[in-house]
Image (cartoon, rainbow, N blue to C red; front, side, top):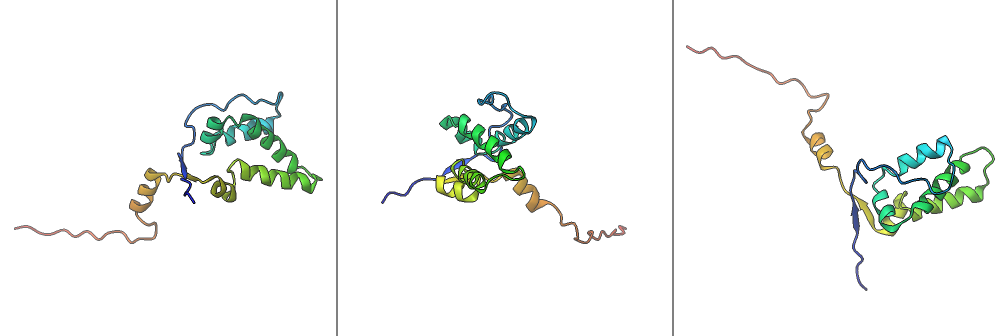
Length: 129
């Protein structure tokens, strides 16, 4: 059995590139906001590569519908499955064998930043003759 390699997604996602045009016609304000947020995620690199624009749009629309009062449980289950298929959940990331690269700069800052509760260093002056 051949071991499948993992794909490492950049933690910054697609960078500063704009989200693609929403392919499902008119979008609500909420859909527009969610659409922008989704396309900033690291997973968007693969969505773009695989041409999953319609699937991401369908997810955005279904997600918002599933959060409305009285939304059927079947819609909520569908949204959870869509999240897995798009790699938006931990289960989905693992199933797709996608991993998100660590932000090395943030990691370095965290390891070199002084602890908030650390005592201030003691400085001593020495007299020189």
